[in-house]
Amino acid sequence: MINKNEWLVVGLITSCHGINGQVKVKSLSDFEERFLEPGMRWLQKENEPPTKIELTSGFKRPGKETFIIKFQGINTRNHAEQLRKYKILVKTNKLPELKKEEFHLLELVNLQVKTLENNELKIIGKVINLENEKNNLLVIELFKSQKTVLIPFVKEIVPLIDIKNNFLIINPPKGLLEL
Image (cartoon, rainbow, N blue to C red):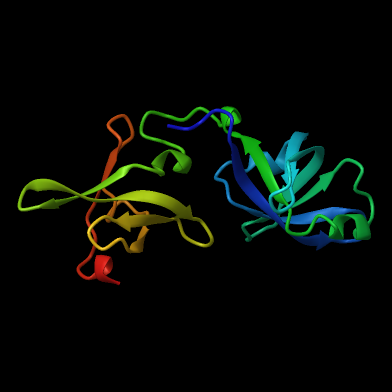
């Protein structure tokens, strides 16, 4: 389950944009409104405590997965440049409500990973992290070998997720778990 007092990284400031204090943001979220709608946001530099800042405007770059946003009080290119590599955070208690078959990726961490072998479910590991650079990947720790493997988070490979009972089932292609 999601701890309601934790932070979730939803974006990464990659560079400044223009001369008026705008920044380019790489989205790590499926919810575009986090970069489009004005309101309070939280920024974090490395492991420092998060600081509050107000988002005044934002737009999605056509054909890209990046956003150009403007924060209150950031009015020059030099000031915007200082925000490079900052993370944009939200409190986990501010996560949007989801439909019945949806879930937040954060809820997958610590789920048991099972496979179907000879018509029996076998526990083979647990989800320890998520990679969300270009594709969604589950980082799974295998109990038998203590190795970690990356599993593409697609319906064909992860056909069942049961948050309530704390497990998911994977159907990995031959050899994927041996990499």
